[in-house]
Image (cartoon, rainbow, N blue to C red):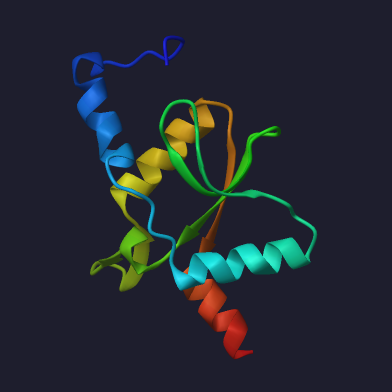
Length: 118
């Protein structure tokens, strides 16, 4: 990340470890999305780790395209509006990945569940 201005550079390692300290645990939902994308012809790497240490659910590393499969833990309920909103860690990860040149799309479990009921 040498090309990025990072005011918290003294804390870079501990901040980075928040995204890399755990082994990936793919959900049933993530596997289902992966299978659907494969059937549609979108070949990808499952649980790809970037050079910077970020884990991407589904990625095409050559083109720096990724899909993050966002289950319930990626959201918070906002009582002021009565809806769910994306949580801080998920938003930060997306911003950092975009700064590194990745195009990141998200599949929400709310939308996926709604589509599968139709």
